[in-house]
Length: 131
Image (cartoon, rainbow, N blue to C red; front, top):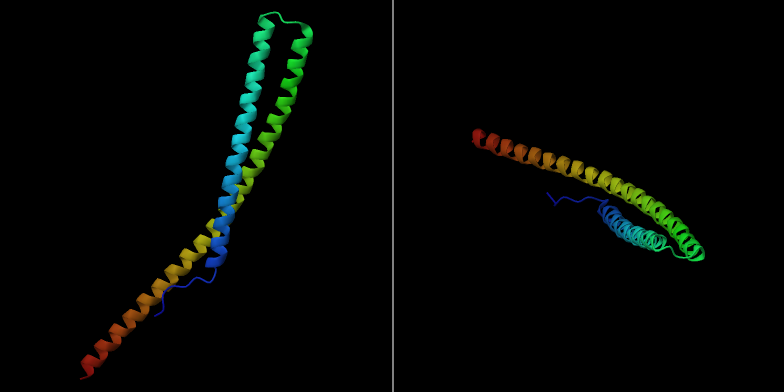
């Protein structure tokens, strides 16, 4: 019997590539979020330090405005990360569905192979007994 062949292997390969791209995108978004988080934390620390040193109100207001901008950037980065994570989960789910189908087909193929082997053995035994 010919070796196992799964007609959807090209589709499975494509889903694996898509999932890998989504995983890389998710990692980039995570790094962007982490960078935004660190930048916000640095600004908050700078504000606290200036407030403790009793800097002028204008300087504190500028720093406070920069923190507000950074908080928006952080929120956008977190949203982008959430979207990327959702896309990755969807891509993983789609790949797993095809992999499960492939495994099911492989098991069917192996059962059919075993059944054919058994029939050949039975036929050989029947011929041997007939002699």
